[in-house]
Length: 223
Image: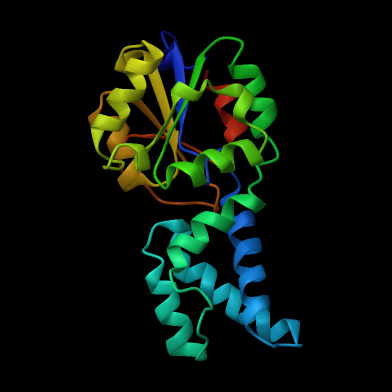
């Protein structure tokens, strides 16, 4: 165990691209959408569009209208959704899956730590994702903090404070694991929690003094 983490009582997580394999379920959702509104018979041609969409999506860290606008601008594709963000919230969770090592990691962590989630997004969508991914039994309902229930989102420290109060732990007794630095890591840092940056997309330079991992099971080498 890393000595910096020896007094930890709770481990909290972001969901998308932390516990949930967002790259997988975002791709599957975009694929299903494009197949429904285009007539490409050549899978290579369709894949070119899909890969562009995955770049424009920016791991979900951009307004969905950007994707709508770029599809129209580059490919003259008009999505059959009057409100794409609403459609996304209603459909994306159906493809939600965890990373391959998420369940085994949570099984080990729950033996020693309280567990919680702090995630940005629509409340129903995010809670459905957690359930669809088979992770609900690791988290008490009250320990899942979704920004859609509060009217503000990470990195607002009020979300982190709310989670700490639900778990009845102090900030210095808690770890927060997330993938988006400007939402997850800086938010946890400002809330005086111990942040762990998970980056599942290969190497990433970072000059800040923050612990970085590349898969969720790496936590077991720290805690």
